[in-house]
Image (tube, rainbow, N blue to C red; front, side, top):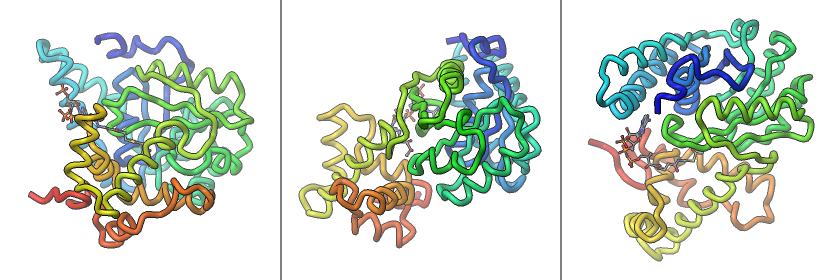
Length: 303
Ligand code: 3HC
């Protein structure tokens, strides 16, 4: 496992410095994995307060990694932790980070206008070679890229939660993405020690296109009163080998995220019955029951 746990791991790509925009669950996970595989990282968010929380979360997650990977080598674990944290700097200005960056990964709020505005500002500030990517799970990469003049150096890098644990990285190309850019993104994924899959810019790419309809079908099953969340979860874990059942996973991903993805798809593809809105999901989100992060979703997480 030691391969890649030092700066000497950077071999394949020209991407040495990356800027992660958004210090939320995904952004901080991406920053953590990039730093732990030897990349220099700037993590950007709106305030130092948010960034301090993100860094604290990264610290906690790294402790879990260290406990596992350095079980017999506490000194090595300590060194790994401090070196990794040392590679992450924080900033409240994405534009200020552009000068030195080879790759941008955007993981901010799922709002097209806000993403377009951000990328058009970055486009003016970034060096020519810098590649732009989004970690969006529901907005077409092509729509975000259209706000820039670097369509050939634009793509998608879609990670999965929890980023330090999930091995997959979806690498997305739009028609204008150059082969050179795409190959650099694939090599970067390998440097991040992720398994990569190639995807076109289609709704949900591969994983969410299959996973979200499956999760919503579970909610529709509950809406019909066919079975309880606990029984559906048990069935899918023990009968299909999933690590979490669909309700546990919905609560883990966030019901607001699920609803956002589904609403976008049902608006753009009203003829597809798989993308129909779910009254139960809408009701829960309306009541602020967003899953584990809010203390309640399909299950209660209140202590
Ligand atoms: N950071 C570091 N390590 C972590 C971690 C984190 N945030 N979360 C879990 N781990 C580690 C634990 O330390 C543990 O290590 P160990 O094996 O040495 O003990 C290991 O992962 C397993 O964790 P737990 O024992 O706490 O719990 P589980 O065995 O239930 O695993 C899980 C947790 C990895 C989350 C597992 O339940 C799982 O794989 N769930 C499905 C997750 C999934 O499907 N994610 C994709 C969601 S879709 C998405 O993200 C796309 C977006 O666009 C919506």
